[in-house]
Amino acid sequence: MNKGHQNFLNMCLGTALGFVLLRSIATTHRLPPQADEASLYVHWPYCLKRCSYCNFNKYIPRNQNHAVMTACLQRETQTLLQLSQVSRISSVFFGGGTPSLAQPSTIAAVLETVSKHAHLSDEAEVTLEVNPTPAGKASLKDFTLAGVNRFSVGIQSLNDDHLRTLGRDHDSQHALWTVSEARTLCPGRVSVDVMFALPGQSVKSWESELEKLLPVCDDHVSLYQLTLERGTQLFKQVDSGELSVPGDDVTAVMYNSARGVLEKAGFRQYEVSNFAKNNAVSEHNIGYWKGRQYIGVGPGAHGRFVLRAVGGVQREARTQTLEPDVWIREVQRHGHGTRRRIQLDHHGLLEEVLVMGLRMNEGITQQHWKLFSPEDDLQQIFGMSEKVQEFQAGGLLKLNNRGLRCSWEGLALLDSILPTMLLELEMFFKKQYTSRKTDIQRDR
Image 1: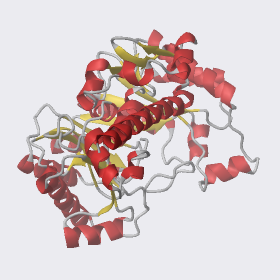
Image 2: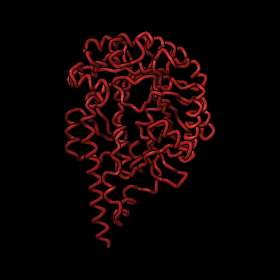
Image 3: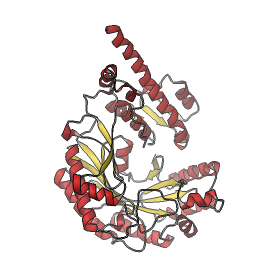
Image 4: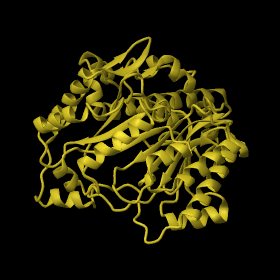
């Protein structure tokens, strides 16, 4: 998610004129939409081992006290729910790390805490990320008894050579067993994660792997391009020439080929990386892409919500302390382990709505944009831009009375489109600032 909050309005802070403009442009008197509900993300930071490509916030525990971790997750959940004063939690997602290494009783305890402080419907989506590791995890059935009703299985590949290169602790057979068990327990509510652009992978081998995957997967597939993160083992292997990965042109062909294969199999692409059939979309992730509030609990978790309990009217971007041991001490001492807080001004909020909304196949409707920006619609902001008009002429972007969205071709090039769109949004705010500054000076 884009974190360039307050790019322009920060320049105004500290001057009397700035405070006038902040109140005028950022509309601090009005709560963002749907401030009385949020989704909840819970981060379990532990793994059995670190994969060769991974730079996520995860730790290999020397010794692990499940009771302490459970108590802290419960306490931070309670604290942040009380700060937000939301009346409803729309979905819960347990991610990591490897949350399937947590005890089912931990999952049940967190959900019980949520239900004590907000309404959590019996039909609300509750997702658990699962790594198909053969050791160290409870049965999936125990997690469904704890309240989980959707699984996201990180198979990553069905090629055992690729799995070894990635440093995964499972093989293709373990992956197939896990998906089969998950589908039995939650039919129609199982997602599989699969990666492409792996070392040694060709377009042909990638298409063959997808054809092998489709008959066994459920109604949701997430595709992720391998990203070489500096400092990881895999980055060093590629950097030294020990391994090679497909080039950008081949990677683009892989992505578009996968889109075609999935569409032929009945999967509808509804977001850059996500495909579903039978409308089995991830409701939790749709909340992110539509700019809704979410509360992040656990080491390193991120959140975006209004602190209504202390009179807040703007969302805060919050990040919890990364290191589990430090986070535990902070939660025990203060009730939460929030390490970083940034108040989102109007511009910062619209940046996130833009970046996340354009990830979706449907894009951003005018009606949805007006929830966050009643005064300035998409046509006013982007309609006169020469760059945006070039994107439209090139068939990459569609801007009309319905809203703003990428075309099929544009969705594949979103990373190159977004910087221009963000710049146009910033320029619009600069023009507003200049105009209002002139008006104020004229009135003096």
